[in-house]
Image 1 (cartoon, rainbow, N blue to C red):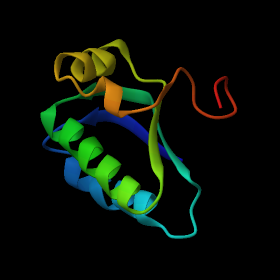
Image 2: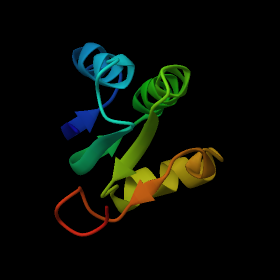
Image 3: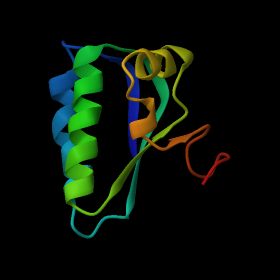
Length: 99
């Protein structure tokens, strides 16, 4: 699981890129890679682009990228960009509700 916190915008996306892309391409990792968004307060197009890139790399590596506990702002961003159907979304991180 990868936990996000604070803002994921153009100024912070580089910090997160390596961690997230490593998690989705790790050969011995779980089939589902969960991105816990419960601590994320804001996401802009740079953050969304990173999630979309991670999703593609996950699929190429035989993994599924799941989003857990997205905020209303994050859900709205996914909805207005038409990308919500691309991600399985859980209402809570693993162990706190949804699988």
